[in-house]
Amino acid sequence: MEYTVKSGSPEKQRIGCVVAAVYLPRKLSPAARLLDEASGGAISNLIRRGELEGDLGSTLLLHNLDNTLCDRVLLIGCGKEKEIDVNAYRKINSVMATTLENNGATEVASYLTEIPVKRRDTGWKIRQSIEAIDTALYNFNQLKSDKTPPRRPLRKFVFSVSGRGQLMEGEKAVREGMAIASGIHLAKDLGNLPGNICTPTYLAKQAMRIEQQYPNLAVNILEEEDMEELGMGALLSVSRGSRQPAKLITLEYNNAENPEQKPIVLVGKGVTFDSGGISLKPGASMDEMKFDMCGAASVLGAISAVAEMQLPTHVVGIIPTVENMPDGSASKPGDIVTSMSGQTIEILNTDAEGRLILCDALTYAEKYKPDVCIDIATLTGACIVALGAHPAGLLGNHNPLINDLLGAGKTSGDRCWELPLWDDYQEQLDSNFADMANIGGKGAGTITAACFLSRFTKKYHWAHLDIAGVAWKSGKEKGATGRPVSLLTQYILDRVNDK
Image (cartoon, rainbow, N blue to C red; front, side, top):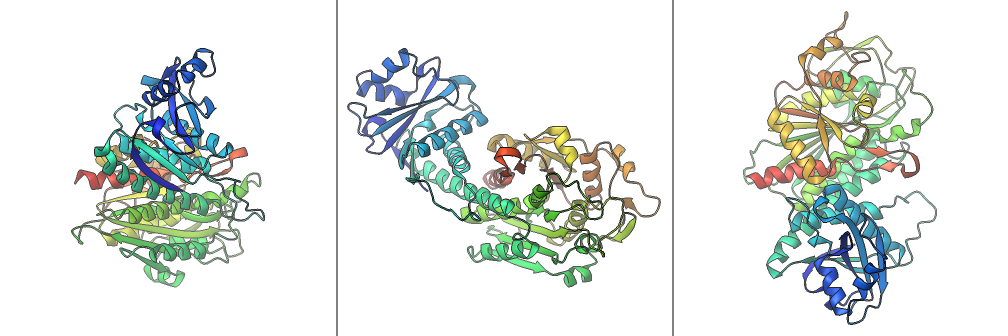
């Protein structure tokens, strides 16, 4: 898809389709008014007849309006003008993309950038448009025998800006939007691949493929023998039951003005398939456990987006990746393992494996002396019970980091919500036989999982994103969402822009 920006009046756009907004109740946007005036009131006449009220997501496609140079005009209902928020704006753009694709449009000029969204500028609207369009048109057909694309696929979007003075800002927003959308696309593709293809070795190869694209990116892969030497007994206890060898993937992007700048470290859970191990999961929906590596996918997506934008910053991605299977040599409930930190862990449930691989990765992160460290994991079903499928769960040991992530979530529309990380919960992890247990009982499962991780993050500022409810969708729309790539990249962009 080609994206570009342009200033100019909508009726003078020589292009396949022009898109403009209509608000409730039957109120034309500035672009729609200009098209209406050029066509001698054709649009307002249709609106008066009730063809389009302006309800959010409603559409009206018009052909060959008089005195306009475009072939078609698509009017999109946006709801009440003063009530349009991030989600509504994304929905409007999604409706635009799917409507145009279904009607065979190939080149489009969008005037949706003039829609007012509170405290959001044109650059933000262009970025959000590109993300929404890419999401709406995403189709995972890599493993289908019929890969036939749409008969006339969309191939060009032109975003309107109010004047030539906004062209540079618009072009910058296009570059950022395309980079973020590409990172989301990558995370979705990796998440949607089945476990027999997307193994720990496959993820390592993908990291090396990304490395070849960007000169400021370096990748290192630790094998099981390397992890054994480092004392990563918690991580290796999970891979013991699988024929797929574990990997610890590190990606380091450094384009900072000061090469000694402390990095932002992202740690992504990479369980490429989670059977639950000896604590076997129920068979229903177990196929969705291929999505248990979406934390890892989001780290790869975010770092590729940062590298594509060539941001002047230092970011390290650490991906512990394993397969959790119930082999004869797999860990058993009651086994005790020693983590890289030296702390011992009683494994009461082998299906609480994500925290076992993360704890060693979080200890490994100390070598980079992080400015902040954020781990991303499809960690607990309890998070879905608590928050549903809308925000990711957020916990951490540093309030400024928590607040920055909450703010980045609001800006990006990829939201998170803070849960308490109080010492009161720590005693639920008490063990009679080891320093801690790997589960904390029935209550507050998301919080006790974060309490477990907090015991390995005392040497730096840390936040934990539990993405179990947002990383993929079930049912008819089954598939990876690519979250929270947008949140992570927005956080990094905010850090860069604040300097």
